[in-house]
Image (cartoon, rainbow, N blue to C red; front, top):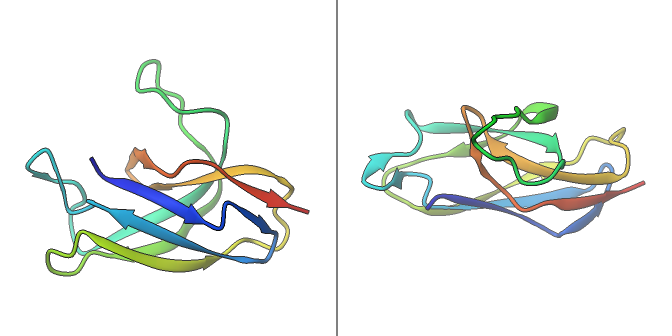
Length: 110
């Protein structure tokens, strides 16, 4: 199953986090993401989304980071800077168009 993670689990607004991924190329034998680049957005954490009834994420930074999907490499990471004006709270990242490929929550401090 494709997954995302964010490190560190606690960061200040304006700080950098590393977004790591695993298995974004294939999921159950099918391409998980079409094309060579996955766009990742940042959203408020409101609990684990469920498919039914679907509630879209509360996006605070659309297209926040890009994950290059080169060749058949199933693992990798990119660094992204947390917006400096982001209020304290819990957030997560998700792959655009595949909202349920998401990270566990991480905390942004003031």
